[in-house]
Figure 1 (cartoon, rainbow, N blue to C red):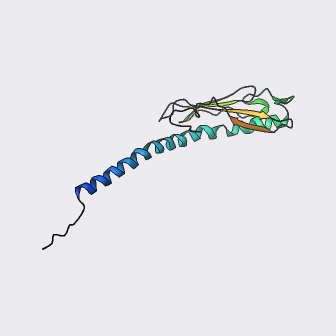
Figure 2 (cartoon, rainbow, N blue to C red):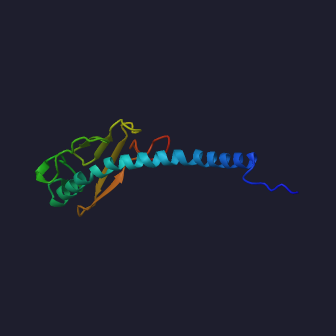
Figure 3 (cartoon, rainbow, N blue to C red):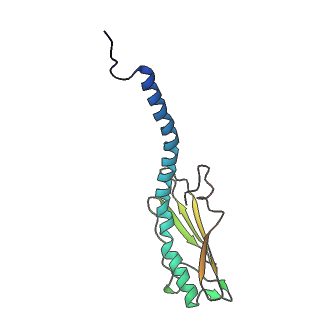
Length: 147
């Protein structure tokens, strides 16, 4: 009589477990970075009102002088909104007189006070183009950029 094998051998099960372990070792760090990006998106989105205010102030001419952005401040001329209050992931936002916006994350749930710095450049007609500064802490994380 022949003996018919039912089920898997121990070696086959160990191979499957090893494959699952390798896949998990690759997936977990990628997932953690994805979660940090999702948390940091609150910081990135919080600057949109300030960006719009700076653009309006420049186009209105009150914050634009000889091709340079000047006199930018929270609440300036009724065009730039007040600084947003902090929240779970947003520590605060600062804007300097040249319109550079710096948003800082809180140090919670994997975030470590990373900064998101936007630099405006206005052309002769007052059109503002934004660039993320290379000095932004969200770009220089060891595990990869989160902004």
